[in-house]
Image (cartoon, rainbow, N blue to C red; front, side):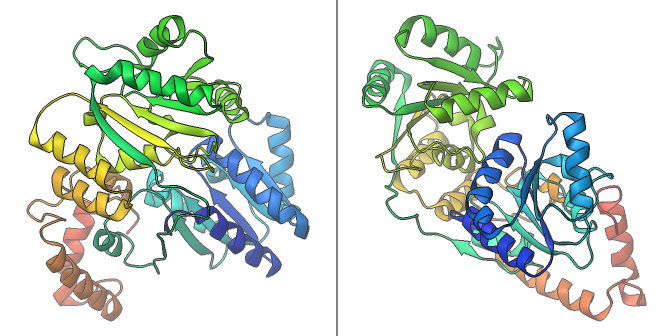
Length: 396
């Protein structure tokens, strides 16, 4: 399930699963996203007497034991959680559907563990990360793919501008203007702390400057992955409630954060991010009725940097952006191939050789249909090569 509106699809799927007599689980990569899902699912499904529950790491031990017991005896219909769902003591009475949100954050074996918590479990994997359509067909060759490529009603196109750091004063004045109109702002940095070896802005450096100098009249906070989960959740909740005007963060806010009142995203050192990451970050704004803006502050004059900034300014289409990202960056780290257990190609290029890779995929499916365990003499060499390449990565 690619791109926008996937939460609504997940809720509908959960309703059908529960009304068919099964339990349903949705696994999210962060507590913030899992908590948001609980709010959305409960708001709609509670009207149909469907019981939803949250299972994340920072729940007190006693309450967690109670929740796990209720899951086991079938009192809970929909379980929403993080990696906590993978624990052996989380046993379902009758799990029939597993949804993995932002699935590229999970490995193959993690999805497999969830599927084995029930019998003949149906699976849905969802992501808002832009993936080239052709690459999606290879990565998800064993799945039916649905693409949601329309904006929800009343959503406005996000205006994007790429500027040099010489425009900093103008950008800051624009942020003030938005906040004075009642909006909120994200400012994303590539680093948590200053690093002498890297010429890039850090969260803590910017927080100190903005809180005490540039935006001293506003409420400024910071967020990064090194903070304790409870602290991160409290900060994000304060931002959602409107108690924080400016949130300075690393890419920890890249996934799932939904604050309709936030209308401006400023990305520091945008040249250090891939196009897919920039597109994900831009998607944190423009989620409400207000016109929203993304400002990419970059340094460097290389053709590659200029080309990437140009792409971001010219299109909001995740598929166009992802194709360009794959072309400019190469396939090496495009979509977390290590998470999938996929080895990097020695010769093939996912962008240039997509046509022949599709032919190979078709042939592979024919071989598997004919000889699922690769036991025939003509397939023994292939079986040996697969064992060698995937040993320790996935169960063969």
